[in-house]
Image 1 (cartoon, rainbow, N blue to C red):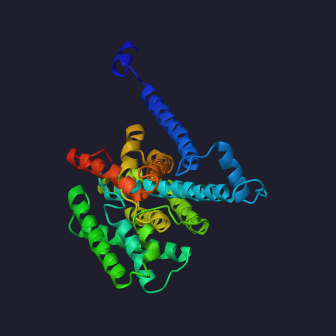
Image 2 (cartoon, rainbow, N blue to C red; image 1 turned 30 degrees about the vertical axis):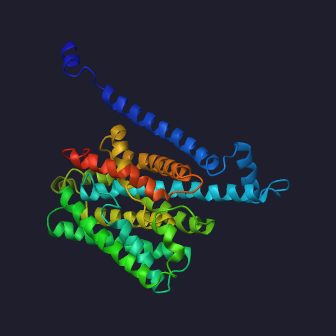
Image 3 (cartoon, helix red, strand yellow; image 1 turned 180 degrees about the vertical axis):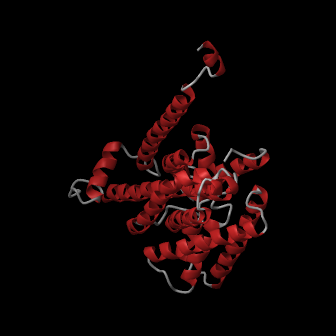
Length: 355
């Protein structure tokens, strides 16, 4: 017995400790999310108290007559409700979408924005606007998903054709090149029809401004479907991370798993882009941060992404509201300021976090 203890002094403990650490990290994330939701409601160009927010939301949702409340208070409460919901949806979609992209490419620096998937969704929406179609929020969702799906397919096709899906630098270059091409086309379309793209200027920079409840209602089902699919796939992604040969030996259908993951990525990234425009680096930062708690288990990475993605997104939105007060900075600019140094740091590391 003494020998057994000497060989494995923590027999049975590591698993418990890992599970406890993961559970504690998830609980901390939920607490941070609750705090950021509250901050999203209270902080802005005008600071509000919890009582004012509660009364304003009560009137905005039609549960009260709003008598005695200023119309401005009701409007502010409604706008912050929409922005908070956008932060929750977009953050979860990009956090989980980034994890899926890294899983199917086995690329530690892969991210929807870096790989051009956001640009694909943006290009599809811009093309639809220039052609006079997809004028509704639901129409934007459909074309954004198609664009995200097409961009994902192109990047993976080029990556596999050159044998570079295991080479982070080369695959990242493919995505950056595709994103640059599509962004250039979008700029050309804007120059050809500046009046038609006026309403999309704020959206194109990655912003929660000028987004209504109809946009949230259109995008929420798509994002939720993508999140459910990601949760269902998370166990299979663990097998995929072992490598193609070993995954095939374990009986995994690699083609089916990748196809399902690409569809989930299109739903998540396309929905997030249609909701808020192209927001960069969230899908890069969240999976790497949560791996400090979860390790390489994608079941936990996806669960953490659903919680910590919105934490980052809401924090970026709150900072965007007050950073250039009394004006406002696009939330996409805030995430880029944070994410660009993170990307440089990851590239300077030998191979990034273990996948």
